[in-house]
Length: 591
Ligand code: SF4
Image (cartoon, rainbow, N blue to C red; front, side):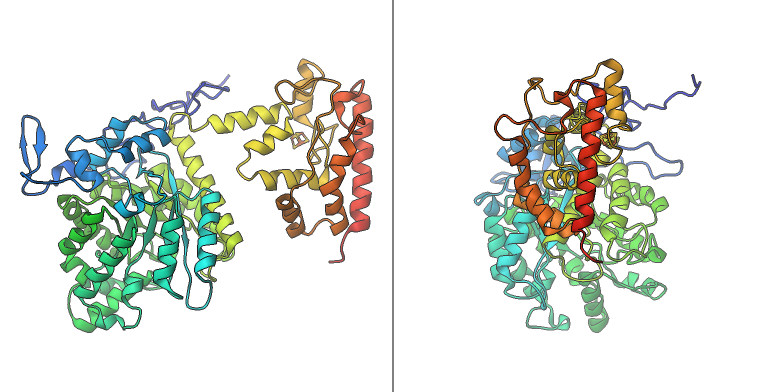
């Protein structure tokens, strides 16, 4: 036995039943109510958390006595932050606690009051179908899906369909980034159909029909009010881009890659003035707090390539975003802060912990980050690697990247691929952080896998259709192994036989009774069609054959539960594989 001790630091075991042989997570002990909530151990040299919270940035007219804060006479709380500061647990906070099973409503209120959590819930959208959720490192890691019509592609119906598709694949919030088509109608349709919070970047609408140079504070406030009235839950406001940052851009490989950031930089250069969103920030707060629209303080100077990561422009803007966080809190507004972008893996922890320090724990909402620049077409993967690290080191929400990133407007399947990549990142971070119960799902699937219970395996898989179709592509019956290793080499089956020769299967499964597998669903057939490995007639057979093979009293020909011994199971299953392989070859399409 090794003498090395596992360096546990007190985090919860992410399994609520302490299942398995790994006793827990290596993360820090949970600190709900403190600055570290759920957090990773610090690599030496990392910035420590701030000793301030939103409680240190109260409105000037509030007073403190007898250990609590009092609002001025006649004050009516509007935002979730107002309520939390007054000790009021709102219905939205209760709903969040129902969804975040490890938190109580009072803990949710406490985190919102401290500014470490937001509940993006516009009062208008709450009147439609919004199901309140939270963004904050005390909660589970969230993912955002971007969509939106561009001047060259997509329309309102297609965007609503993409919204539903993103919700189906686990998006916790959706940003409508439309820059083309009927922006107003698209936004309205999305808001009326969305169960998740909707974010926008209002500057896109501000320049429809005018050039950026003609942008005025009146246009800014009018546009914000209109979208707030429609029910938008959070706005990306690029108020942190400053004139002082622009000289640093010259040294970059790829300049400014944020649309909002580049537009405002152009405005500042044209007018020789400071960013109007910064200058008039309090007026913007006044509009947003009226409907409880949350700030997503935009990172207009985020790096667009590894060579520009963590540079003076990016960090200068982050410093200003911290100042704006404090100013928004003073106005009673909820705030999260946006982050990069393209960041090498070794710099991610520093970026997360610097934001936590400067912005006093305000939720960090990061785009990726991509950890390499050379895989266009696969940036959902390059960025999910960075997003996993970002979530573990402190980001509260991960903005997805699809395979179309840098290449075009995502289509429906790109939305699915992006969502899945980011659900993986978010869930991996939650397990690693030791969030109570985060690993229960994994443990349930491991149990099904160990029992060779394919039905349960597929049911628990995040993408049931793909898991089932890929399994049936090679072997379309319920066996005690799969086609990856085959009967003789199936370690899971052998492992079970160390105890006794049985398949396990589902609870209540009766030996001698055939477990019927359903025919492939249309979705599962489509998965196989798009892979292009099987001929259409093979897919057709899989869609109907299973039903036929196990119908009536006949038994599935290679179900090892219903044969006498291991030897016979091996024989029938090998034969079955041989037949399938032969058929596969005959039906193979020319390449
Ligand atoms: S055949 Fe191999 S991959 Fe398939 S269940 Fe058995 S061990 Fe797992």
